[in-house]
Length: 217
Image 1 (spheres, rainbow, N blue to C red):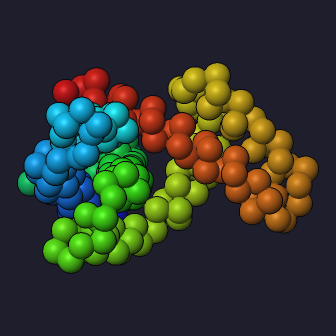
Image 2: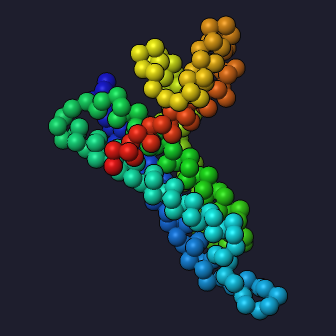
Image 3: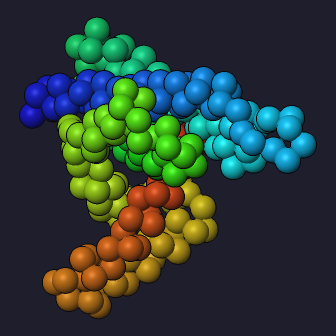
């Protein structure tokens, strides 16, 4: 089963890379447009659209986010390739990193591209700009493991491993304790009833996993 699953792991890396490539490309083409687009000003100095504060901040955030995610996904790809060449089963920590790479790459790119669409004006409505292709990211969201399902699995696995592995921040421990208590007292619907805590825990896990992975670069 693990050998069959390796196809899923390579697919998740590929989906993560595809999402990041789309996001990078959309930000680059939009930046080229906004750099050349002149805006009216009362003194006639005609600043370009890229100088608007919210776009300045978003371009900087996008570049930093894409760079961090690309580095993290690249590390996961390198480690997975080493396992495949050696005909080894990927260790648990790598499997988790690949899941995090897929979810964060897709979800962060969706968020960044949507925010860019809101701030760049009518350019986002024009044919051929790339914004009309954003449903591609929606496909990435569900390909090779739905983002929400993967996040639930992260939280479920963390609850099981917590007694032996106390890694993580106080905030992570508090979420684990809250969810554990809810599962013990909340009946058969406790997991669904506490879905916000489930996803909050997964978010914290993903951030910790990324920090650990980037620290190895």
